[in-house]
Image 1 (cartoon, one colour):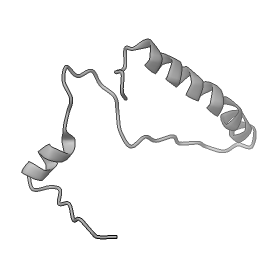
Image 2 (tube, rainbow, N blue to C red; image 1 turned 135 degrees about the vertical axis):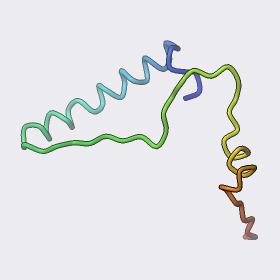
Image 3 (tube, helix red, strand yellow; image 1 turned 90 degrees about the vertical axis):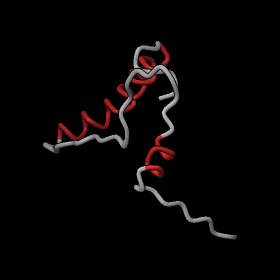
Length: 69
């Protein structure tokens, strides 16, 4: 997320995740289970920061409520 999809650090992180998940997926497969892996975001190339909360707020799609305590 921080470095973009083409950065070697992103590739290493994906490989680390693959290695960590491999035994879990193998166990699930051996038991005839189906595994669905989801992510709450995607990663794509950008040339500048994307301030999504600001854009959503301007579009009236996000409200922030500050609470004491």
